[in-house]
Amino acid sequence: MNAARNGPAIDVSGITKSFGGKVVVNNLSLRVEPGEIYGFLGPNGSGKTTFIRMLCGLLKPDSGSGTCLGLDVMKDSARIKTRVGYMAQRFSLYGDLSVRENLDFMARVYGVEDRRGTVDNMIGRMRLGPYADQLAQNLSGGWKQRLALAASLIHGPELLLLDEPTAGVDPKARRDFWDQVHELAGQGLTALISTHYMDEAERCHRLAYISYGNLLTKGTVEDVIAGCGLHTWEVSGGDLYELAAELKKLPGVEQVAHFGNTLHVSGVDAGALRAALAPFMAKGAQTFSEVPTSLEEVFISLMGTSPGPQGGEAAQGGRA
Image (cartoon, rainbow, N blue to C red; front, top):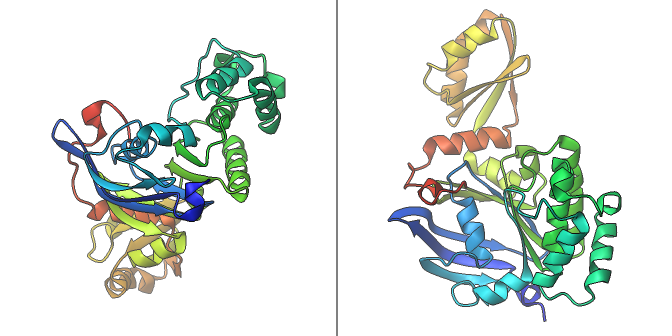
């Protein structure tokens, strides 16, 4: 019986983890529903990797409670491992084994029945056929990524935990990857995916953003943007570099960013922001128009208000 179908795939509360007395994940609570693609965002050192490793049973939380696929995250780590597919940040398969040999090895590890049939099916499913007998170390970044995803799926998991799976691959490979993830979600698989890419965050059903181990916001993209309360103006015209330098000094202006031939100027206080822009509007040298705030602008704003680091994952030699 699939425990996740009778409740959330992930439902944890107050999860905390420290290394050497330094807090890496601080009282984090998260709920992910079955079949959901949940984006997990945050800067390096924010605690993403540590949290994912706790969910898949590789690390035990210091405190907190909850379930992963209906199993207790504090007591059932061995059982959780068999039902979760984990894809690490760095390619962790064997470079001196072929694609087929890597998949066969992973099938052995998980005790998969009919290994040969399962491996053949996965090679076809992931379109790895032309590379089946090629050494993994000779694959391009995109094909290594596809092999790693295939390996995480080989035992038929109910939940995928993917840690920055598209880092270092080209845009087409990233798009292909996300198409595959959405296809899997359509078949009922749940995915928690950490990423640095804002366009990828927008592909998720819901998302959470953490900084220095603390949860700053969560919800749909629309919820997160609305909850931030940030207002943004787009400025086009001449002398934008000089204008940007002047605007950054003014009260009410929290962000000034170049976007091609325009500036985006943002602030939480709509009145103060407009007052800061008003003298420049009156000059008529540039064109000003209010535009929707982007997810990237929201996260930059959140970073500016987040609490300071508590040691971060540098304490254990890892990234977030």
